[in-house]
Structures are given as C-alpha cells and as structure tokens.
Length: 264
Image (tube, rainbow, N blue to C red; front, side, top):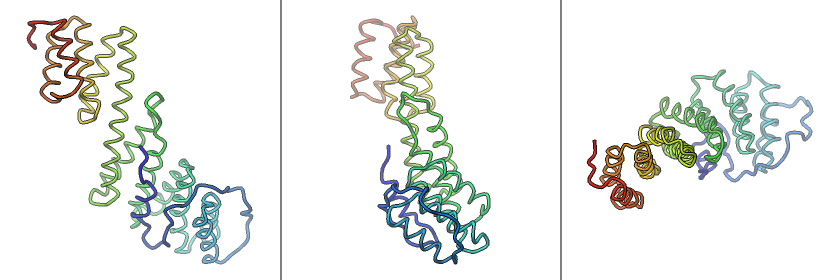
C-alpha cells in the first residue's frame, strides 16, 4: 500500500522553505548532542537542513525544534515547525510527525502551508496501516484524515493523491470485513457472516472485494434457508461480473442447491 510517498512529498514541496531531498534516509538519532547552544537562527536552521540532507532525520527534527525554541518569533520558526514534522515523518516517527503538524496548524491555521500539514498528518496515519488481520483503528484514522484533505483542499495536488489513497484504504477496510465474514462462515455463524458481506456491498461496493462478497452472500443465504436471496445475489454477480470466477462458483452453487428457484 506504500507507493512513492516521499516523491509525493517532494512534488508537493514547502512554499518558502529550502529544497528537500527526496531520498533522505531515516537513520540517525535525536539522542545525539543537541544541548542548548545559543546560535543565530540562520546557522541553526542551516545545520538542521544539513542533517536532514545527510539522512540524519531524527537529529534534524530536534534541531528544527530548537530553531523554534530559540527564535520563536522569527519567520524561520514557522518553517522549522513544518520541517520538523517532515523530518519525523521521513524518520518513520509518525506520532511525532502528526503532533508537530497539528501544532503547526493550531498556531498557523490559515497559513499557505496548512494544506501540506493536513496532508502530512494523513500520510503519517496512512503509513501505519496494518494488515487485515489486525485492528483497523489506524486505517479509519487514515481515512478520516485523507477525507479532510480532500474536503478542505479539493483542487490541490494533495487532494488528488488523497483520493487515490482513499480507494486503497476502502479496499483495505473491505478486506477486513471479508476476513471477519469468512471466519463467521467457518464457525457456522451464517447470519453474522451475512451482515459482514452485506456491509461490503453497502459501504465498499466499488472495491475489488465486491464479487467475492456477492458469492459469499449466495453461500450464506443458502445456508440460512433463503434460496430466493441466494438466486438474487448470484444474478447480481452475473450481471456485474459475468466473467469472474466468483460468478461461475455462484452459478454452480445455485444450480446444485436451488434449481428452479427464482429471485425474490
């Protein structure tokens, strides 16, 4: 599910900030010496940028934070806040990336770089999406954050990328519903399985899981003793996915278990 994230970030850019390096590694440690040493803002920011470009992203983030701490009223402080968030993101410290981006938005809600901060929050959740066998709280948070980017900035390049990722998130959530539904089927809990598969059709009907959901509904309807419903789902499957393996299986299932039955 992870595809060219850093390239997307570089394309997006940071208005008014220095050029970023797309291939920054996530090495380094924020535990290196960042003891307080009073420095002028330009040299401190420059050192943070140098660390960022060399791949020491955690130390870079700490130094960008130091820019804001030592020079809170400087124009550089605003840039440093967002660069800190980006540095944490590249270092895969997604929680701090989210916190830094949210802090930026709380202080500069109307800033021209606010769209980027919202986008960075969404990406930080998106990068943490786990496989379908695990809890999907992060997936839901990613979906909410991506929708927020699309809602607030629908004409931006951030929204265009967010819409693509929303399709992938929906496919992931549908996959989770399918995994639970199949588990209920194996356990003989046909009604619970039926509800899960119906949810895929109602909430994620454009995903790759829709054909299998229709087949599973054909199966569970027969198991629940409602052959008319089984025939209906098989017919919908045939009308929408006539060449799929799932339709062939559903057709055989109905022919074997509900011959002559018409849809209700």
